[in-house]
Image (cartoon, rainbow, N blue to C red; front, side):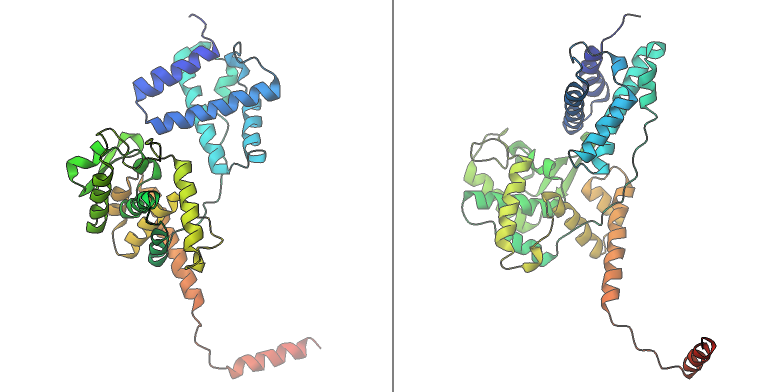
Length: 331
């Protein structure tokens, strides 16, 4: 069998395996691409390897483990992010194993034995209805404020991922006349989510105001390009700063655009919606993901219970007698 260089195999992994054969989403490709960019830069800087001549056998478990440690210790990545990077490397190792067969270097086969790191799942954070209203009210009345109000209203109404909303084009909205959104989630799975009348009104008003082309982004930046995730996060920080003046509970909290997704799920759960329906609404691939909200709801109820003052017990004469006996025994 003709030998295949690491560089050639990696390019084929992305172009043939991920894009053509598996047809994974652009989000997965972007995540895998960023993983190998970080990995290759780390190998070049730490081990002084020449990337143009790097052999497949040079991707050793020891180097990969060193890279994973670098992610956690130097880049302050969480164990969950570390595991996601490892999953991308494992996927490439599986592809190399299927492609090369017996010619696969032993070091690549050993990569598959690197375990994922166990980590504690944090309690899902979410906003109260009053806090959501305060954040939306802090958007402002200019063009940017109207866009940001619509952005976070759509996030709360649909429970969508921020990437799903920012990827919307006018052609995705116009056929439904603003009555629902057709979202494309992970794994290219599509789902339609109905909109409240208030959201429909604001969406139609926004479309009429901007009059873009069919392939124009629904929520552009000031240059007409799609608003980025970092741009949306920056705008949210400004809104939170203003909203916190009226809603002190918003201060000193880690709130991101993804918090609106958690908020939608929790409010649906508290409203009595079945977890199976919530899973469909959010586009969860596995019901286990939705169960996280059940656990968070139980935790919240426990905190509410702890805030209650339990009834006082009637004083027991027997306990006083036993206390006296124990005291005598210690003399």
